[in-house]
Picture 1 (cartoon, rainbow, N blue to C red):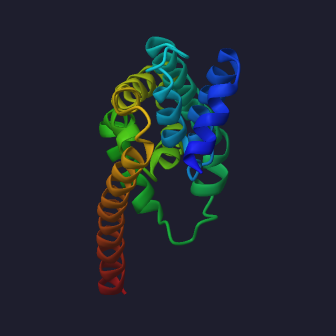
Picture 2: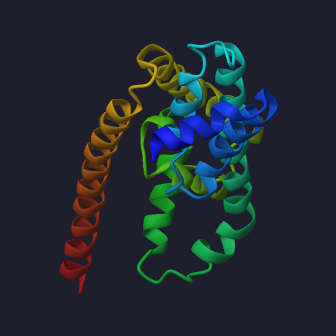
Length: 202
């Protein structure tokens, strides 16, 4: 299937190749299950035969990702108050929100820098960045840097390994699985800690 996608993209006009790469980089923040990294890698394999340029691919995908991050920032900024702070999610206490506010105020920008390296949490981080009303310009710059560094890695991989897309896909899948497992463990740990504390208080 990947070979078919690669062949199809290779037949398109270069402008449409860049549009597709921009779209998938953008949409991943809004719809995390999208295979954005794989599509970017597939696009990067075209660099080897000079169908597309390394610098344009790197900048287009990075800007697309940063803009997608900002879209979710504004979703959190506009709707976060109604959904989170108005008590719609009963399992989140005010005390937890206060701690999250303090924690996000201290480390929010570091999370933005790391967000592209944390599969499965990217849209969550952008949403909560908006909820906690971090500076939007600074947020965009940090998101752009994060996307640039991540895309530099995967575009270089795609360019160097050429047609060996399945191998890169396996590496990315393994990386995502490990990160998701670690993230899940951390969430379970803090959730258990919270419920144990509530039980003791009761």
